[in-house]
Structures are given as C-alpha cells and as structure tokens.
Length: 114
Image (cartoon, rainbow, N blue to C red; front, side, top):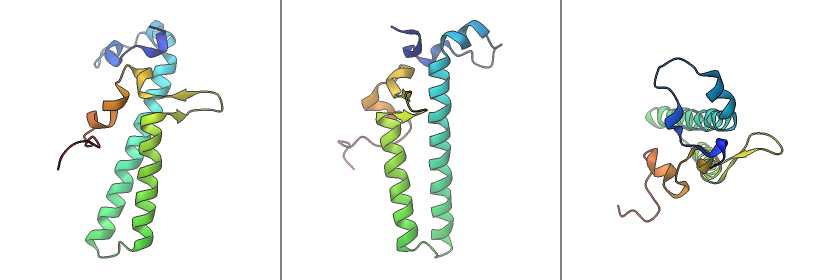
C-alpha cells in the first residue's frame, strides 16, 4: 500500500506530532484537511438553510442553492476533490471505503430503505 493510501489509524489521538509520519503521510493529511473543510462547509450551508426556513424565508432560490451546493460537494467527497490541477484526493486515499464514505458520515446509502 503506498504511503498516501494508509488508513487514518496512524494519526495520534491527541498525542505528540511525529514529523516523520507527517512527511510520509503528507498527501493523506492534505486530503483529510480538504475533506474536513468540505464537510464543515456543508454543515454551515445546512445551518443557513435551517435558519432561513425557521424564519419563513427559505425561497425556491435558496432551496436551489442548497441543493446545488450539497450535490456538488457530496459528489466531490465521494469521487474526488481537486486539491490542485494535478492532485485529486479520494476517500480511498485515506483508507476509507468509497461506497461507505458518506454513510460513515451519517448519510444514508442510496439503497437504504426509509
């Protein structure tokens, strides 16, 4: 397994930073930072829409913004985020199962019954 494809278990849980591991896993760390930023952006977008809805101001335009933002970011989280022109990070780069990545974040799988 290439260094950038190791699972996240190598991250120290609140322990000291190990420079050698940072260097070895730089690609995965960079990808994790991008993915975390996208997840935070989606949380903020959802909060914005919920506040508008609570105030009775969630119009069709805002609903389209919400849908477009979620669709784009969720697709990139599942299939790859372009970190630069020639670097794309995918869930597999962090040792995550691509088919279950979003499910691990609390999103239902498309085949889940409601």
